[in-house]
Length: 210
Image 1 (tube, rainbow, N blue to C red):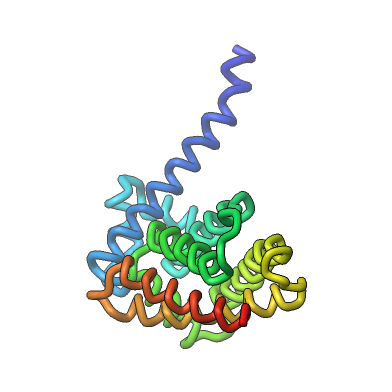
Image 2 (image 1 turned 180 degrees about the horizontal axis):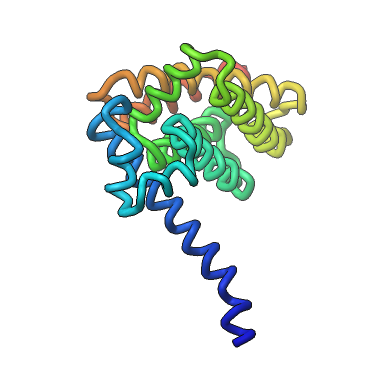
């Protein structure tokens, strides 16, 4: 009996995690197919095979669901970059291109264009919203991760820590601009987006290395 009781909390935690993932997946599908406005918490509950109160228990609002999707993508990117190493001898532009191609792939694997358009629009409409604060923290974290990668290659590229930090911010800003163009254009493929990014990063790397 003791063994069964001791395992119960772990089982409950796994069930809660699975239910949370199911709710997020249902919300993601509905927002992509029906749009944010048409997606209700009741529809999400039905698609996830849970009750509406359960959805509200996990996420108090649709905005919180979107925040959770953004956080998932951010955490995946951060975890990946902490263990990623550029190929030996890679040019600076190639390193930047690979970094942001990885970000692009991960970003779109966690949410589609409709979700990201809503998240970006919320930042503009409600500058004091929690989502804006979340984005600011995400950007700061990614700046640091990218700067650290660039600094680790400083031996071959001659980048000081301060120059690595500056280049990380400029490159991230370039990606943000390209990302906005990408999510606004329903016809643009992810591969086209990444090709544009890589071209930008090649030019940026060449400018820094000149």
